[in-house]
Amino acid sequence: MAGDLLPEAPPSVGDADTVLPEGISARVRVPASSANLGPGFDCLGIALGVYDELTVTTAPSGIHIDAVGEGADDIPRDDRHLVARAVRRGLEYGGASASGLTLQCVNAIPHSRGLGSSAAAAVSGFAAASGLLAAAGVREPFTDAELVQLAGEFEGHPDNAAASVLGGAVVTWTDSPLEANPDGVVADGDIYLARRLAVHPDIRATVFVPETESSTSHTRGLLPDSVPRTDAVFNLSRSALAVVALTTDPECLFDATVDRLHQPYRAPSMPHSAELVAMLREHGYAAMVSGAGPSVLILGALPVTDDVVALAHDIGFATWPVEVAKGVEISW
Image 1 (spheres, rainbow, N blue to C red):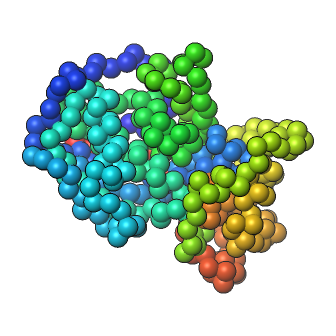
Image 2: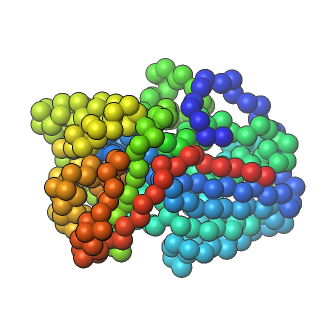
């Protein structure tokens, strides 16, 4: 399902009272993501090859959750579970419901590390709902545009979610209901839109993951309400350059990943991440904080040397070389 978004006619929707039969299943594999990519605050993202897997089966009643892997000991096992909520919402959007659900979650994306775990959870739930609806013959699978919209509503902005849906790198933006809506998605509030960028084949990703966690809401609260015009202009130019660097000219990645809007303000709350970014950039790597942190991301063709891995390890970061991933996979 992942790919470039194109305007499509809204697919047919099932009867609002449709109850899915018991025993149908959908399976989902969804990648992690990194948002911002330096200067592109809330509008640039990239999919990374660390995957959560989910199988959802309709059941006679209740919510039954079996989870292993990252965060499995800390998640609720009832209808408060983020994935379960997304499945329910996706079924509702598709005009159906289920008497009960059994969720089998295999989690590999670290939680609260700036790698889009909550966005991936939302995408996996909506993608699973799409698969269940298709398996039951209620309607066609959700379009990519619908998945971006539904997950964006859950997240409040679409950068991580769109990367997990579409794969590759993404540019995202938000419109009000009164503005143009090129994808024809239905929304009660903001309209979340995205386009996929084909990442240059020379670009590789390396993620440095600490043991410590970070709250996105906390780090967002550290940002000022206004910034100097020179900083705004700086980030606009570097965001535009980032699109060029990601798609056609990776040699520009070092310059294209400099930021003045969010990383400097968040640095005091994650000193080791700021230290690692500075150290990596001193070694010539296009390094940046991944999303709201505290993980750190490198993009580029330059291999990460053993001495750099050792330096990162010394300040508490594991080194994960990862692929630039394709988007969510759904089967039923």
